[in-house]
Amino acid sequence: MKTGLYLVSMVVVGLGVAMAVTNPSQASYEEYAAQQLSAYLRDNTCANAGELLKNGCNQLLNENQSEIKELISANTQRQNYGIVSFYQTNLSVGQLLPSFLDNLVPSYHFKTVGIFNNFQILEAKKQ
Image 1 (spheres, helix red, strand yellow):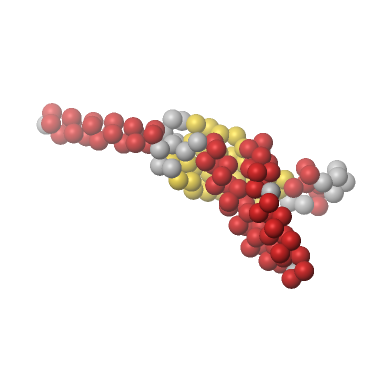
Image 2 (tube, helix red, strand yellow; image 1 turned 30 degrees about the vertical axis):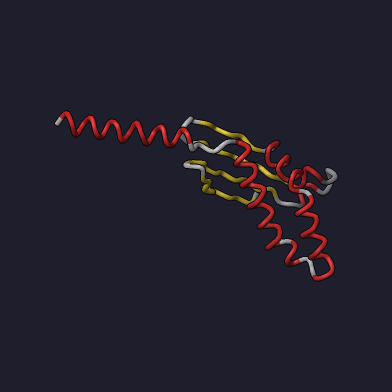
């Protein structure tokens, strides 16, 4: 009986250590989120921009990855529990527009969990 309890305890401790070591960082999340946002914009915005604007749109995304990461960083809150992290990101293109246009463009809210060096989007809402 004691051996079984000892074995279970060791597995739980080992799992906890593995989770702590592989808890993704804020920088890793920003990289992940920038890739996800860029892919979404490429597929849903640039692809629908017409042939004349499509290449320019894709180029704009490729050349501005650091700005996209900064936008994500400035609008993300991380809750770090040591073995797992939760990220809440609120993105609004409207904040980049003149104030009289900001209500014309939707904003988005994302909840993401980071665990074992991976991310999973839990919720994505258009607001």
